[in-house]
Image (cartoon, rainbow, N blue to C red; front, side, top):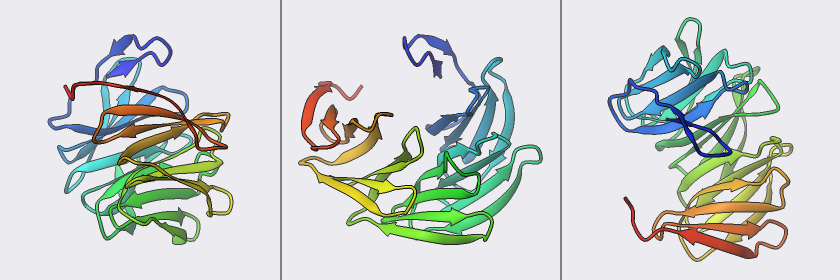
Length: 227
């Protein structure tokens, strides 16, 4: 489903998957969308017409997808425990690396067409360089990772694992800050100004807003129903 990011109004729906959709990303110009599904496929869509452009077959559930900066390539990860790179003109796959657990998130570095990030159930985040075809750095969390994303400016990688949130530098691949909370965190996103961040809780259905410099909770909003 495609919605207006400001108003929340419905724009259109992409029809074609035969299983739950685990991940969705827009291209930089918002002209394309890519989705990853439990039906063992990733699909690329035209956001103007809603039509399916490409279907990328996998051998298991696809948990995460992302475009290259020019949207000519895509990366996927999931229950195969493999990160794959696809040329979207030919749909040809290339295996980049593997994890020892399900891959929860893949991200194409916003500031470099040569760096890929992946996070898995093996507690590891890996930076992969496409030029050398090697893993150039690795961060290991204390417990299983539940989510990972990169900030809008590409300078920070945010990670959730257990009752902790991590903020990693995209420049030097090091931990900048760790904040521990009293609930299991399922997702996180940092404001473009890097002054606030928001988290989602897996068990209590609450969304919380925090001050980034101090780590202080500023507010929360939630639901009494999981439906």
